[in-house]
Length: 66
Image (cartoon, rainbow, N blue to C red; front, side, top):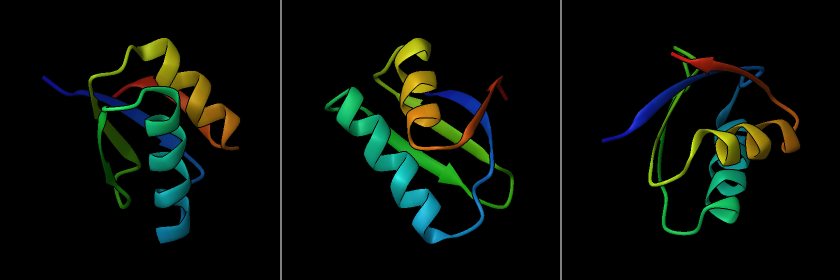
């Protein structure tokens, strides 16, 4: 089951790609879906600490569970 996280700072498709790529690089095989208007990232197959590190490493503000 996918976990949902609030991420601030995503404003465009490029941001979506950056977040998605960062998470899948940190956790290969993870399924990532981004709801850009809501600022929510759904991730299945990666622990929260890896998601947080990946999102922050990509320059976005990880706000925790959505």
